[in-house]
Length: 236
Image (cartoon, rainbow, N blue to C red; front, side, top):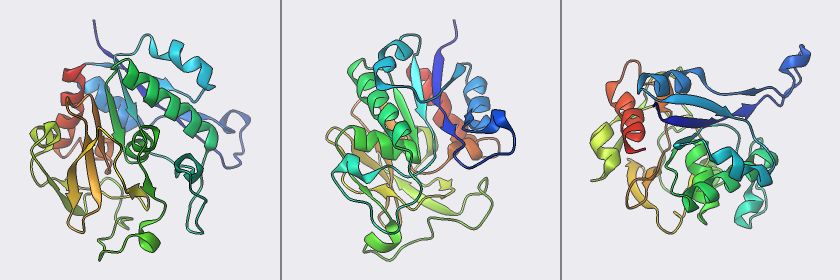
């Protein structure tokens, strides 16, 4: 039987002209297609009350946590800085519970961009709320102006399951202004941009893996990014 991979859904928060689009849940189609291509079965995970997470996990073999809005800094015992973007506290509450319970049950996780951030926060790490105002090093451009399906900078990946999948110096896209600051206990930094910004996290057995870029938008033209999804499915 195919492995079942849950993909966390974002929600449309802006006013929409059609009633069924108002607060509609959605998952990125390229992520769905990537999961199907690996031979797994994708299912969408809209955010639910935390007390329903345990039942939601029962049929899942793995979870992909997708991109989306900024993480509410109060989950890191911080107050919001002026450059903080849109947040969705309900989604944060759901995904923090999802991560914590999945780790307790050893259900593998793959975090993408915001997904990397929420994994790190859920496990006790912290984020830069805004790289431009908080990160001291000379920076690369982490909010690219190029189309989102085009890579714009390289990252360096150390020896890890991530390196086996994507190589030592993958060329990646970059659409973020938040980033991991202090990694959570049990997570190792396995990839960085040339300016030092953390681009990849992994635990000891790679059952928790997270990347800062968006492989779902690259895999059709960059085979190593499909290898990232395939290696995740193969670990389930």
